[in-house]
Amino acid sequence: MRCEKAEKTINAIWKEWDKSLDVNPEYQRLGGIWDEEKKQKLIDSIINGMDIPKLYVHRLNKIDEFGHELAVVDGKQRIEAIRGFMDDEFPLASDFKYTGSNGHRVEPKAEPRAKQKFSETSGTYQEVFKELQITTVYVYTDDEKEIWELFQRLNSGTPLTPAELRNAIPGQMTELIREIARHSFFEIPLALKNKRYIHYSIAAKLIRLEEEELATNKDLCSVEDKGLDKMVRDNQHMEAPKKQALLDRVTENLEYMEKLYTSSSRALGTTTYGRSYPQIHYVFAKRIKREFGQTPNLEERLASFLDMFVAKKHADKLKDEADKNPDLEKFKSLASNGTNSFPTMDGRCEIMRTLFSEWKYV
Image 1: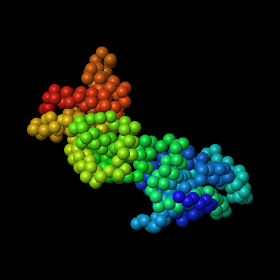
Image 2: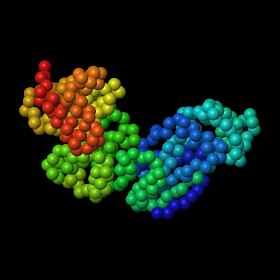
Image 3: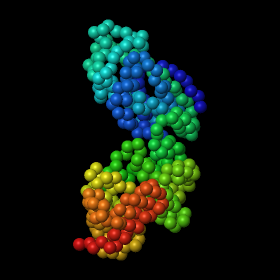
Image 4: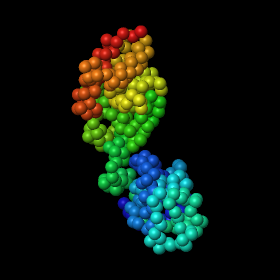
């Protein structure tokens, strides 16, 4: 790996990099994480000559199919903030003050002011801002592992989620997680947006469940982050038959779940009814299909039960303690062991199974 430091103008980051820089290489975390206040502070720092962290970009050994010559390794949120300000997506902060301390002092009447968007600043200052410089480090390497290692090191002091860190690990298991997360189940029945790669987190859990069943014939295991991290590292060079088997098994069950958890279903969580946990429903659906597979209209019955179950949980919250349903109370209390632990998932699935077997479908 070779690194070269250079100064890049704001205008180049805005215009020159518009087509040539890939801001979404697969190891990167999602964008849109910074709120407006954080973006405004960055722009304030740039305008007033305060030091900001360097940008790290990987110079690719060849132009990719999208015309990219570069890929951002570190600085994605900063680049998005700079571009957002230039595109008038947000204004300067209400308490912004221009100091001119970066050596680019302009006439008072041309100074940028609080609450101004970029296009509202004077033409004189717009030209000054475009020529401000950001220290950039160009990284030269053909080894994907070196880029992953650099990404991990640069982000070791920032609050990346476990899913974001796992996504930066190259290999067959990471590719499989990404592929499963593109399944239509994550777009329609699942109420969770893919913020901070939560879809990747869920996909990894479902793969881990199937990996355990392939190895031990048991349909349940812990799906906590430590185990998921190990699964990804251990399967960087996973053989094609195993990868295909895991893909087929997860896909088959997700397609079955799509019949139960439709766009109108509340079972996987809503704003009103609270968050649910797809990995529990994944195991529950498999167990019910195996045990009650010969039951007439099973899918219709199961979908109706799930809506009833969610409604009962919500209604139980509003009851006095003495009137609460003991099974639903136990279902809630099991979460004290962690929602991804074996005892919690097994206990919750068993409660749902018992209630389904006792439920009288009309």
